[in-house]
Length: 213
Image (cartoon, rainbow, N blue to C red; front, side):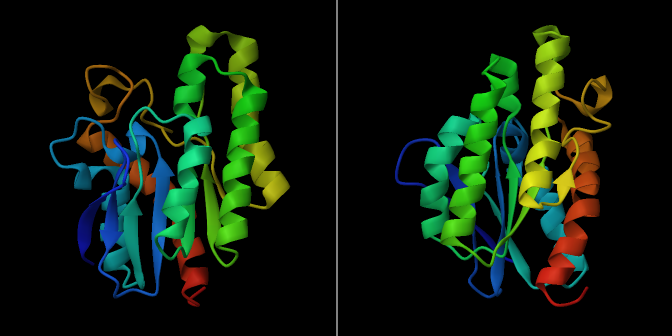
């Protein structure tokens, strides 16, 4: 599996492009958690680690890391159209929402934006399979907000019949030894844990997409 770096035509987003040898791409569409914030090698972020798992399983997919640090769901709803028009999509992993939670963006707005992204993928890539990754808001946002925020993801997954990673940072969030000094972003060991959680949901989706279920 060959990964190249391709910059979008506007400042900021950088994604990995496939070599063109596989029948489809697995797109990881997220924020700094996906992009590998402050890792010496962004390839060690969880999408890169999942690329290794895909190769080891001999599944015919390339990985595109379309993570962008600081991205909100509103910004993602705008950017997704550029991502979709430039490459094939076999599986689309939607991992946005963390920055909405940190900023206290109204949960109805976050849910509406995520639904807009799901709708865009289905409209432009109707054969693509979508996997949704859940997020949680920090506890300092208050119990009502955090409960409302947490409920967004299973509700969207049920309404759209999507496989769900219940919480992207399960077992990593709040664990000092698995995070950078900021206490928010996973370190290399944390990304390994994230990759394992995501792979548990993603692997059967990939096998089904490859006709190996």
